[in-house]
Length: 138
Image 1 (cartoon, rainbow, N blue to C red):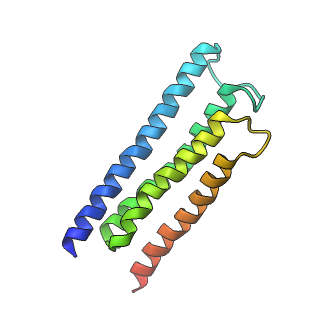
Image 2 (cartoon, rainbow, N blue to C red):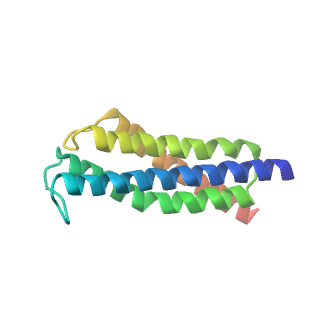
C-alpha cells in the first residue's frame, strides 16, 4: 500500500508541474502577444484575435489550475488507490484539449477540442472531489 501511495504522489507532483508549465507558457504567450500587438493592458474585444484567445486560455487556466493542483496533491496524499494514478494525466489531457480549443479556433463558434476539454475538466474535478470526500467520510 505504501508503494502505491508513493507512486501516486510522484505522478500527482509531476502533473502539478505540467499544469504549472502550461500556465507559464500561456503567460509567456500573453506577454509576447502584448509586445507584438503593442498592448500594455487589456486586449481587443474581437474573439477571433489571437490576443483575445490566448488571454482567455491563460485566464481559464488561472481559474482552474490551482484547484486541480490542490485536488491532485490531496488525493495523492490521502486516497492512494492504485487506479487514481490515471486521473492526474487525464486532467493534463483535458486541460491541453481545452487550451488547444481556446487558442487555435475562433471563440465565436464551438469546436471539438473545447467541448472535450471542458467536459473532461468538469467531470474530473467532480471525480477528484468525490474521491476526497469518500475517503474523508470512510
